[in-house]
Image (tube, rainbow, N blue to C red; front, side, top):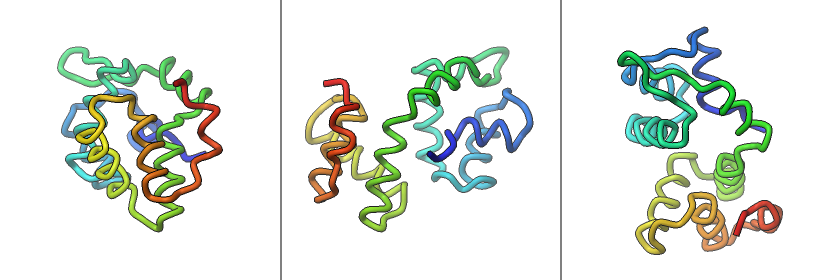
Length: 134
């Protein structure tokens, strides 16, 4: 299973504290995991979900929450990876497609949107059906 982007950023820097621009730079340019816009959206989502907390103007990785997410496996990341490899697409293109589904279906859970996007593109998503909390 691919390593979580925050875990990779922590390993890269050797610290769990980042400024927002530093974390965007690491995710986008140093590790080349995602584009700048996608990194900013990822960070906003990580703050909302509790994986990152803001303290004294810095973003701090919540390692307990990150470990919990990794144990359960990041289903969304796994689905994105599966769709990208099945279609031969870049990860960013799959994310853009999933975001396009949000415009069509509204504010559904991102895992459901990824599932629908994969199905829409003809990707076999059967292995994820059981793990989706519908």
